[in-house]
Image 1 (tube, rainbow, N blue to C red):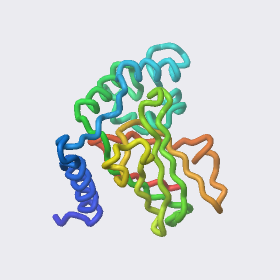
Image 2 (image 1 turned 120 degrees about the vertical axis):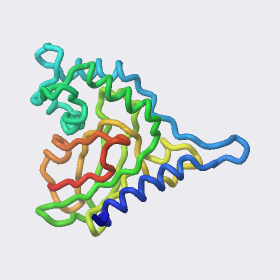
Image 3 (image 1 turned 120 degrees about the horizontal axis):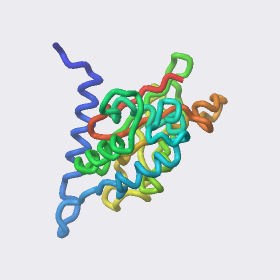
Length: 210
């Protein structure tokens, strides 16, 4: 079966990023490396449970996870036993696997549609969930005429040799979408229901049908 153009694009984009990040970018200091964000899986899981487990039963139900759009969107990925809720152990297990992957930066693209059509000039913000306690920088991008945007963290959060790279850190994010001319509903920004986890195992393209 022939590979779709989108699948080829995703593969090329990911390979390009991996190759770029492994090239020797310093002459005398050896290969430049982008470190994985310095979060502790157990601390993140403990804070997530403290913030979200409203009934204190030691599990995060789908209703409780509405307080964390990024984690709710990742429920199937984190939920190991298929009970449609998360334990602290399941969160720790998944985040520990991320750390073992040692991926410091990943390419990530959003495609935004409004009323079924590509939305140009949408401002897309990926806001790290608060239980990461500031260890993961936020990311942003603006959609083009096709509604597509390559997201990136701020150059201030990148090594000097990689400031032109458009990529983001692995993490769990809530997504906020605004527009300079369209008053998008609060459920897409100030009271967002949108979220995504970003890791090597997930797709590097997200379609947002608003």
